[in-house]
Structure formats: structure tokens, C-alpha cells
Length: 208
Image (cartoon, rainbow, N blue to C red):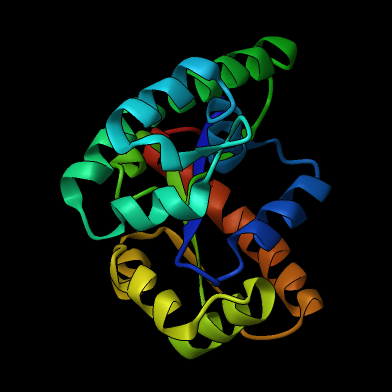
């Protein structure tokens, strides 16, 4: 049985970097953000978003993601509406890719589900083990500001709207602290991966 590993982390923690390190090590990655980007170019999805949130959320045939984020950020009902439109389609894409992976490689040991809102969307319960990437808040804020030019106050607000980092750490099977260089992170990931697999095997009752 192919082990299902969840990968998540708070904003700016370095989750995407961890996913890339695992990808380079030969671990298949199912990227929820990439699937969401595919969903957002579907005409019927864009029509549903315009119907729900108004014409400002679609520009030149594409979704105005910053505008959409601003609309749903502090509005639970709006966020629930967005999730009802997008999430089932994302899950369908991921499920199809998972099926294709296993059909192509029946003996595949594990696949990683890269999901930013793994806990917030209840997907953690579907995983055999969860790997959380973390770093101190101020480090994460600085990374996002430098990377995206987003205002630091906005980064902190978005972080506060998610599950607290301490709760993710407590719920995780393995935690990677990303506070050094990329090479430091690579070493940490490669050292942690066998522990992640061991936790997943223990939960599923697989022999080592």
C-alpha cells in the first residue's frame, strides 16, 4: 500500500522548498496549489466566482487572486463559498493523479500531498503521517516580505487566520525547523524522511 504523507507549514515556513527537496529525491509530490491554479482557469469556475463575488475577481480571462483573497480573508461565509467552488475540483484532480501514479507504479512506497491548509480543511485525517515545516514568526514574516513584497502586517494577519504554528507542531508526526540555509534544510529533510515513513508505517500497520 502506498503511504499517504501530508506536507504543510505556516506562511513563510519553507514548505515549497521542502517539497522541491523531496521531489529531487524521487518522491512524487501532489501539489494542491498547482491543482488550484488549474481549476481557476476553468471557464465554469470563473463564471461561478463572478456570480458569487462580482466581476472584479476575474481580469483578462484570469482570476484576480489578490482581489479574491481580500474578499474572503475576513469573511467566513465568503471563504466557505470559495472553498465550495474550488476544493471539490482540486480534490478530484489530486485523486486522479494519485490513481494514475499508483497504476503506473504499483509498488510506490509513498506520495506526498503538498497542502497549505492541510489541517484547516480537514485533510490531515486522510494522511498516514504529517510532516510540518516551521520557523519563528518573525523569520517567516521577513521571508514573505522579501519574496513577495507583501506588507509585514498583512503577512501577520494572514498567519493569524490559519491554524497556529504551535498547533500544527503538536499535531504533526515529524517537524522540520527551517531556520538555516537551503543546504541546512536539505540535510534536515533527508534526515527526517525515514522518520516520516516510519510513522506512517506504524500507523498503517505495515512492516518495516
